[in-house]
Length: 436
Ligand SMILES: Cc1cc2nc3c(=O)[nH]c(=O)nc-3n(C[C@H](O)[C@H](O)[C@H](O)COP(=O)(O)OP(=O)(O)OC[C@H]3O[C@@H](n4cnc5c(N)ncnc54)[C@H](O)[C@@H]3O)c2cc1C
Image (cartoon, rainbow, N blue to C red; front, side):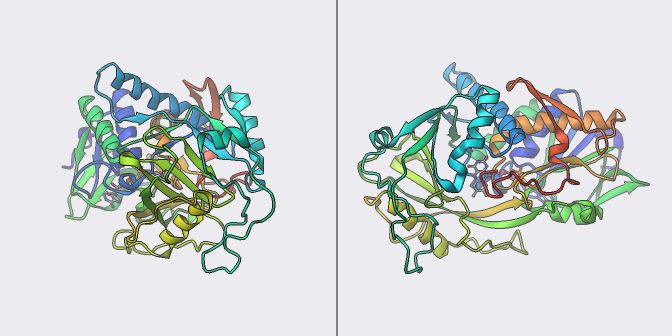
């Protein structure tokens, strides 16, 4: 394929970000081709996502984008309830966040929620225990590794309060959600090429002109979007733009444990999701009376960046055991299986854990990367932001100096998309963790 008239835009990567962007651009009349080295949509890091949809973030822009995107998942739920085809099953179970000194008692997050009209409830100890009977609310922070002699030593006092965000939940099948978005994109005219690996970015002058595939063939288009997930750094290297990115992306290894829910607490299927920075874990309901136990990246755990984002070791390590035992501090009646099960995959992480939604110094080359373990939920809202940004730049907008302002239709506010720039200094207010 060589003719530039075959596509207006090429998207590299058919994960949740690439498929959603393809759907959004195709819906706006763009002729889109998506290229992915896997055999189907969503087979990259998206397939391992915990797919938690929540609205509390540590920055205003992060909160606004998530609040906007939440409404799209809700619409999917409504569609399914009306018997219409939906891209995913969204379980609307709410998210309970323990208030701790580690998360600043959620003061900032609640301030942003108030500003955006996002509902939340403040639960006291009694209310927490009513919903989570048998929970041990002893404070243990800072989270420790189980080989630390002080593991499990009470730090004094108990968790007194938590904030419940009713506008939260999870998607049961994240890979299926990408497949659903790809299906809708195809219905709008987008084309998907699977089992094709991108090996080069083509340029004419300082304008992108297409991509080269590993088999030597080329596909030409005036717009190319890097949505390659944990391989985003390779695409940037192919284009020779790594030096201009002040918040470079790196693949970070991550384990999520799948265990039976604690005896006496009914999580399944309707939650709530629990986020607990005192023990450095989050918990999400799963089907069949199981739960997922994920990490909130406490300082005691090593951050394992991988060099080989395809062949990295996908077996569970003592990280699995550490996460599960930390959660057992809270839920002493947690049945701990002898054999670890769950997922091991990669986050595509920036230094401030905020994504890059941006253009590059090569005209026509765009970035939707650095999703930092927290952008599944923003599939719809980030796709609208990216499509708006691309149209702004392609119509002559000087995004680097006069950033595109993006109106979030559901949140009812406009944000300065320069916040997500590749040229930013790392954002100080960020939690600098998966919480965004
Ligand atoms: C364990 C885990 C738990 C998570 N939990 C949550 C959560 O609860 N909530 C939340 O909001 N987010 C969560 N995330 C983050 C979220 O899942 C990701 O941000 C999101 O799925 C990333 O989507 P993506 O499309 O950018 O990347 P990917 O899904 O990785 O897609 C990138 C695609 O690019 C393709 N590709 C790469 N290089 C090439 C190439 N050279 N040629 C062709 N194709 C290429 C890959 O094959 C892949 O399909 C989690 C992530 C992980 C790993």
